[in-house]
Length: 182
Image 1 (cartoon, helix red, strand yellow):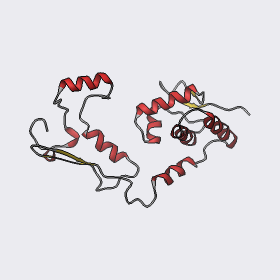
Image 2 (cartoon, helix red, strand yellow; image 1 turned 90 degrees about the horizontal axis):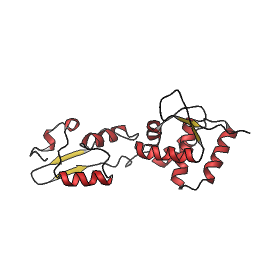
Image 3 (cartoon, helix red, strand yellow; image 1 turned 30 degrees about the horizontal axis):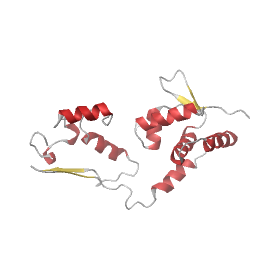
Image 4 (cartoon, one colour; image 1 turned 60 degrees about the horizontal axis):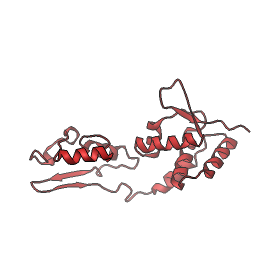
């Protein structure tokens, strides 16, 4: 650690950020490579605990001594009885929208000029939220297990493709899938 202590003797959730090189921190901040300033210890451990496939004993391990610092991040997918791809397919196959409506929106998504991953994410959201549920960046990030920045980009793409529409009365930045007329 910058203050000379070893990480094993510290409370991970209560470590303040200390810049070792303020000039580099400023450069990375201006280039947009830093979302915010602060310690990443809490962010790393919270992400692990929030993962759907987290199991006890697979917490991130932090180690430091006078000359080195190590972080051990365990593969949460290793040794699972059900592969993650099967779980994603199970989520995608959930029927929550009227059959015609779902097919019409899926056809619109398939015709879009986006990557297959982006289209898959849109289908997962369609199956999760349907035509009536209201959602925002936070809900999208939680469903897709991504951060809020890519969730916001996905919402922007769905808005420009006119797949979703803004909804008032639920707070700023809330949307729902558009109704497709037969």
